[in-house]
Length: 152
Length: 152
DNA sequence: CCTGCATGTTGGCCTGACCAACGTTGACTA
DNA sequence: TAGTCAACGTTGGTCAGGCCAACATGCAGG
Image (cartoon, rainbow over all chains, first blue to last red; front, top):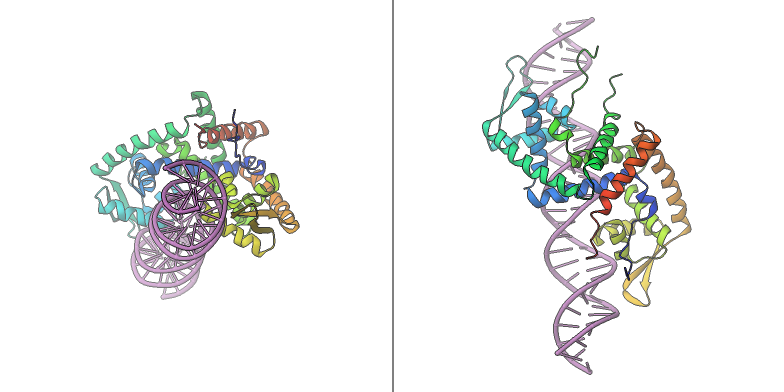
């Protein structure tokens, strides 16, 4: 059995790298997401989630919270504003800033995306039981926390 | 203390997603790698590692082992062949195929890359102790294995 | 006042993942 | 034997993400 040795494994030098594993897991997630959602949905979800949790934010703050460049935030907001899922207006207290807020349509879109996103997590983690999922999540969280901006 | 609350955390909806964590971890790895290595070094490393571990391979086999498209393998090999780190010639037994082998220069390049790669892993995993690193590695391996081509 | 910094915008670059088409070659079958 | 089908490698292209550079605006400091 396993006649032709389905293995076809990647080389050990790669399997040993967490950075490589992370990269592969990341594109797996991207693929699964792409099967369910239109293009750009990932960025939309991130921005909408930030607005929902933190209320009104400036574009720069959004970028900082999500780890995105100002440039890219700008693009996402253009899309969202075009769909009236987000409201963008100059901050009277600081006219450099734009105050971005969630609209009702935006909130609804967020919940839609959340459902698909949950389904994607389930597919991605299908091979792990509940305890393992929790462990993986915690370890990744710890890893990411250790690379935060480092507040001196 | 923590007066201005350095937090600036991403929203919970994102923190809860393993796919998002994987994506962030992946770009972290990419960033750390970019600090030490020239562009394209990641793909080079993967291809060289496959050749070192499995000997002579066809381009299609390389792609299958690494999860790369034939197209992209072609490009990487052009680069490597241009530097004489790899030898590419038609397979006499099957003239559709190219037999790709590692040269001495390629082997040497691989070891160089390995050193930098190891250093990157250390930086990436700096926040985790040995046991946690091992756990994370195992869980990611299990996750990836569960998404293999599925040999029926 | 003026220097410096933050903000948002535009435009561009590069990587990685992917798809489509083509000519070549081998294998399988009618 | 001929004809069909599949695999291989190549070229050329798309798309999202992450990044950098430059610019105009506005704020805050000396």
